Image 1 (tube, helix red, strand yellow):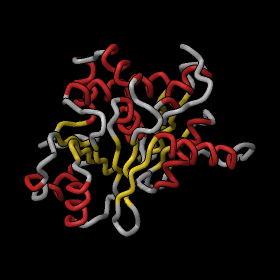
Image 2 (tube, rainbow, N blue to C red):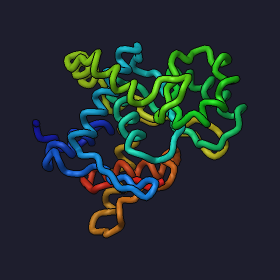
Image 3 (tube, helix red, strand yellow):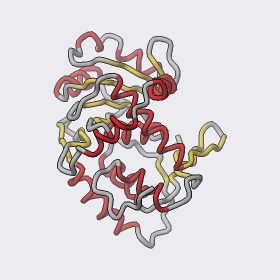
Amino acid sequence: MKQIETPMRLFDLVDWQMSKRKKKQTAFRILRDGKTSSCSREEYKEKCDLISYALLHYGVRRGDTIALIAHSRPEWNMIDMGAMQVGAALMPMETTLDAESYLKLMQDANVRILILENSELLNRFKLLLPQMETLKEVFTIDLANIAESFEALLETGRRFADPEQLQDRRDHITADERCTVAVGPGKDINVLSHKEMMKQVLKEVDNLKGSKEEALSDKPLDDLQERVKNYAFQYLEREIVCRN
C-alpha cells in the first residue's frame, strides 16, 4: 500500500494506519459483557469498505446525510468511515433525545439513511419513520426483527462490491467537503468539513503525543470533542479500547 504522507480527509486515517504498521495490528479491543475481543486494522479497513459498497448500492450520493444513534463501539467507526468514503456526512446523535428532537434534527438535515444501535431504539422510532420524507433505509447494528442489521449491511457490501467505483468516489472528495454534522447543546446543527475536522484532530494529536493516556473510547462519540480524540488516537496508531 502506498505510503500516505499526511491524512487530508478523515477517512484517510484508515489507510494511514494500514500503510504504517502490520495489517494484523489491533485497531480496536472490545470489552463487553465480561468478554474481550479484538478487531485488526485489516478487518477495520475491510469493513469500512464493505459499508461504502453497500451505501453506493443504496444510492447514497456525495452530500447526503446518514444519521447514527449508538454507543461507542467499533461498528460506529466503520459506519463513520464508510459513509465519509462515499462523500456522505455522518450525523451522530445522543441515545436519550426525545422523539420531537430526533424528528426535527433529521428533517433539518434531510437524513437519507438511519442506523440505530438496537431494537429498543428502533421501537422508539416506529411512529417517527413515516414522517421522515427523505429517509430511504433503516438499519440496526444489533439484530432486530423489523430492520436489516449491520451484518446484513456488510453482506450487501460483499455482494455489490465495486472497488473501482469506490476509488473513483474517494478520489473526487476534497478536504473542503462536508464530513460530519455535529449536533450542539441547543440542538443546533453545525456542518464541518474534512479540513476543519483535521485541523482539530492534529491539534489533539499534539496534545496526546508523549502522553500515556489509554486510548479508551467509552464516552458517546456524538460529542464532537470525543470524536476528535477518537480520530487523534487513530492518527497516533493507538489500539482503541471500546468498553460499554
